[in-house]
Amino acid sequence: MKPSYWQQASSDLAQGDPVLGPLVDRFAGTALVSRGEPFVTLVRSIVGQQISVKAADSVWARLLAALPALAPRAVLGCGAEVLRGCGLSARKVEYVIDLARRFDNGQIHAERWSEMDDAEIVAELTAVRGIGVWTAEMFLIFNQLRPDVFPLDDIGLQKAVAVHYCAGERPGRRLLAEHGERWRPWRSVATWYLWRSLDPLPVEY
Image (cartoon, rainbow, N blue to C red; front, side, top):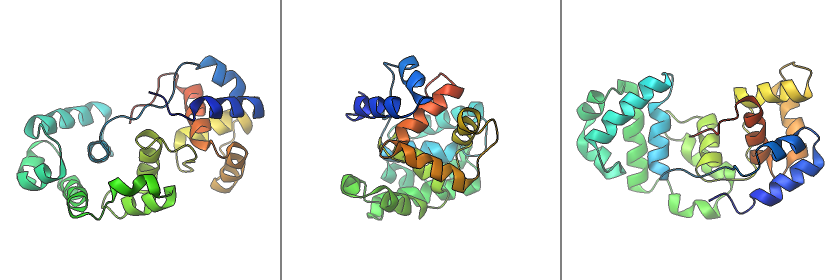
C-alpha cells in the first residue's frame, strides 16, 4: 500500500515544479512501498555494501538458509563462524552482530520510531557499526516511508538534479540542499520521482 500522503505530495510537487509535473503523470499508479522488517532491511543493507548485486543476492540466500528466522537473537545465537560461512566478510560479521545486539538490548528503539523525528532515528542508526548517514536515510525513505528525507550524498539524486535543473553540471552539497528547499515537506517524494527519471524501475531497498 502506498503512503497515505502520496497523492497530496505528488499533487503539490506537480503543481509547483515544471520538471516534476510530467514525472508525476508518467509514473502515476506507482509509489514508495515499505518492504520487510526493520532489522531484516538493515541487515540486507550491510550485506550489500561494496559488492555487486549478484554477489549480495548470493550471500543473502545463504544467510536466509542458515537463519530462516532472521531476527536479532537468532543472529546472536548462531555465532560469527556461521555468518562467515554465509560469505560475509569479518568486518560485516562485526557489523551484523553489533546491529543485532543493539536491537536485542534496546539501544535501538524501533517501537518508538513513530514518535521520533528523522534526525533522531538517523543518530540512533549511525551509532551502529557499518551504518552511515546515507544508509540511514535510505532506510527512512524505503522502510519507514518518511516523507521529507533529502539524501544529499546520493549519486542518483545529484545526477538527476544536474540533468533537469543545472544544465548537466553536478551540484555541490550546498546548492543541492538549497535546491531541495522548494520541495519541502515532500523531499522524499521529489527524490523518488527524480530517481525514476533516470531509471523507470522502482528502487528496492
